[in-house]
Length: 294
Length: 293
Image (cartoon, rainbow over all chains, first blue to last red; front, side, top):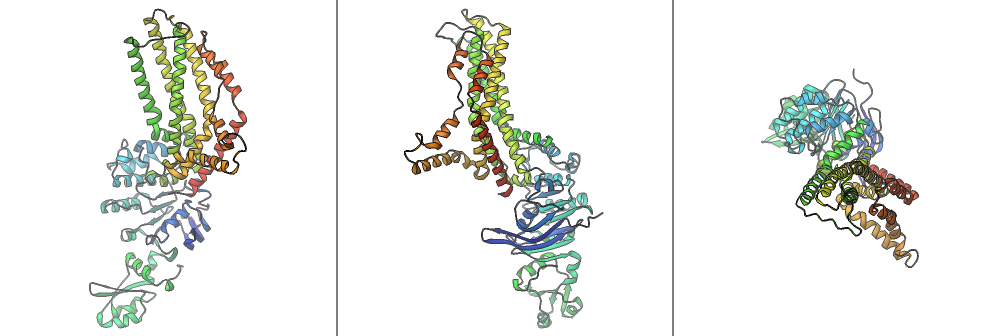
């Protein structure tokens, strides 16, 4: 059963580095059993948001994760939260078997048998030292570790950075097939938006420390529409105030918010924008016209 | 407790070169060198007051090697603390450790425990092994040198335990005495990484110079800071009593030396040092809790 209480709840979340405010009062809830994508440019505040959520940095405002204050109770909270911040973060001096032995002792929800099961059929062997593994093998090992932790929230911050397309696809497929249940919640940040779009249930766009979109994926198609305008009808299309316009291979592509598809249909070819198209559209829209989500 | 021991074990895995492999290599080289010297007749024993018996030869040799291992341990521990408190930052590994349900204070506590208890215990084991080697050397020497009295096996084992007890007591009390220095460099390492090594000396030196600028001419020679550090760096024993015990013709009595050791300890200074170390450890853990880069 999904927990009716949100797994993560943030109210007025602010973070300053000196005089520079990085997060400008974020408000959001993440319910249980969802797969969230937190998407933004470099420097938009994604990692700072995750760090606040994981108790790695102190913030103004209120943030609760599984009912706990992450900064004050990080060690206790991490019994129910797993995260991968960087594929290269495993301690390099340990052998895989040493790593599993240590995790068995220090993490009450880690299952060595499950981790070993996830590694069956891979090139990662128990006697290998982490520093001798390739980047892709380290990613496999790290994923096996977090999937072997019976956590309620899994946070992935650019988990596939630097991996080739084969590893990236395998990484997300295993995550979906072997890990996700309705009791677990997943929060992912990545620049490779197209690769995770298929698995997301909700999306949050962050720009300059503010959320500009926070919506379930199924409502993206209801709120946003993309039009490839017929050249003869372009003026009419522009009159409907698109949030974004660009020219691709001689065609004019316009993205609309809140304009029904039936209204746009006579003007050209209408579709639901992909997440990356929507991201580009909303990131380039004037700051003054953006809205805080929900 | 299981988690604490597992974290100590990972310190052992990360730093075993200094506390297992190097002592084992030294022990091997020492064993080969000293046995070859004895067997090839290159070891001469000269004594101001006549040829010692094999038992006393063993005691003196064992005490000397205990001193060697102490001299080995002192700087190696210094470098361990300078490295270990910031080692988790290497290769972004800090993010992995932060993903574990273990507090920063506990993790730094395990590093301190490893540095002040587990690793010295390993070096103590190496010292005991050196003693076993020296027992064999003493027996071999007695066979080769006519004037040297043959060892009494019971007396030899008794000397082994007496010297071991003295070395263990010295190790324990001296490490507690010097713990503030080690935790100080560890705390600096948490913030400054490898620069903690020069800073561990530079900061007190600058404080001392600053104090002399402010209060030049007053107070003890060199100022209060230098005087305090000078006194704090001494873990003095009553040298005459120790020399008399070691060089006497009668077997060494551990109870005399340990009693002398305990009576010479500045217990207020010891307690203050422990408190200082505890405060530095806590501050280092709070810094680590707040800063992940």
